[in-house]
Amino acid sequence: MGTWRRTTRDLTVAVLLTATTATLAAGCGTTSTTPAAAPRPPVVADPGVLARRLAAVQPDWPARRVVDCKRRKCVALTFDDGPGEYTGRLLDMLRERHVRATFFVLGEMVAADHAGFTRRMVEDGHELGNHTWSHPPLTAMSDERLRSELADTEAIVQRTTGVRMRLMRPPYGATDARVADQARLEGLAQILWSVDTLDWRDRDPAIVARRAGAAAPGSIVLMHDIHPTSVEAVPRVLDTLARKGYRFVTVSELYGRAPLPGRTYTGAENPKER
Image (tube, rainbow, N blue to C red; front, top):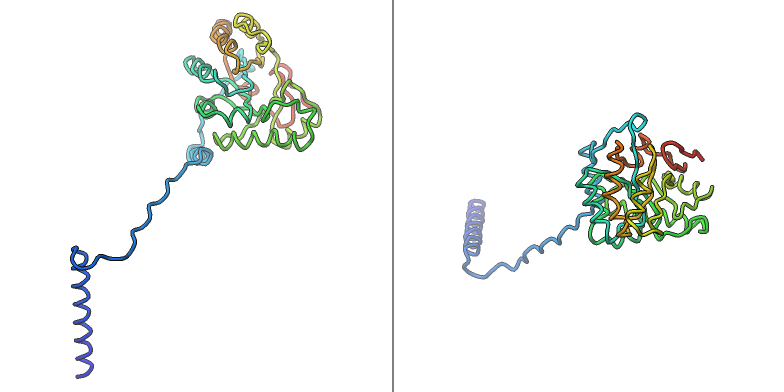
């Protein structure tokens, strides 16, 4: 009998607790003192992480082209020292004509690229190359400074775009065995040029276009997207070379594969295997 009474009492207490809880939930009585969950802070997406995830689920992204430059007339247009004020206009021109190029970017310019031109280069299918952080003559740098000029630029480009660069261009074309060794350690091939438009010196679109338009098959053409006169010359360059039957390719497409780290290349007709 005692057990039955305790059980009945326990059930009564349980019913009263249930009723009280229901009443509070309906808005009567005192309110609950349990604090509401704090809102989660906004998640800031890392472009590099997103790009790597996208590449993982889409192995063919970004789209790759197969161009046989041993059978076709190819030319690689390259632009140094950006991204800068005029890079957006250049990208518009290239996109309109479905032309791909190679951009050798400076780390300090990528850091200041609030317009997003570096990411757009990748989105439009252009190739990126390392042109150091601040454009010093690498042959005059200490080993540590040489390493940081390349590594810091690699890091910010990969963080910004998700791209791991495979090419580098030493500022002023200044290289030696020590620079080549460091480039190899960083996984970078050294890309020089076979056609120098001297657009940094001669700020005349007609002169720049004439020099670039004289390129031979397999040429790597050097220009700079930081000069408005160079960007102004690009439509004439494209028209001239297109009339001659040239296909515009990236540096890696020119060679049919990624150039080998540490080696120096000046054009498809004359790779220097150092």
